[in-house]
Image (cartoon, rainbow, N blue to C red; front, side, top):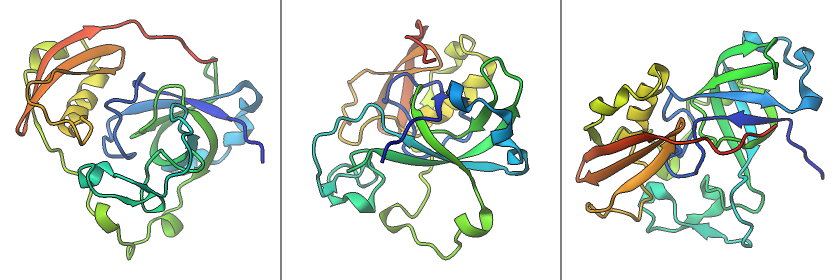
Length: 232
């Protein structure tokens, strides 16, 4: 079966480090679905304005195909316990497909590279290929009796963010709350807990340096960086 991207995501993440592990965890995050030229037909979006949320079916574009492994170490379990790959949402799968539920923030049918869909809460790397889009149906997709196994509860912000205020003026106003929420979720890999280590992540065209000791994340520096490349 051949599949081709119908769109790509334009997001504030140019590298994997720091991306939320699930969609909707950081609801303030803004992204845009940009359709490939063959699918830039406003008629394809007719009726979509009646829905509040979407399913995005997409590909893990930066995950190597290293062969099938039946178990992985979920970050939710601290990276120590193994679970079956089909009991997790790990990107290391037989077919590297992702599924994200996002909120529709707006639809622009007349954009230069449009139509485009503006969304909230996306957990996708900039340029990620999107293979299909489906409306979220509450009566079918929200199942009140469902159980969540080892990931039953949504993760609460784990860290207190300090030292960020002097740097926030460098960021656009609509990115500040998103950055604070991202940092509070603890962007480190589960196996890294060195309090002396200086971490760096890129977000919205800025390089953010920080340290974490206990439950406190301290922002050390924020610098603007050049955005690398653009997809067509």
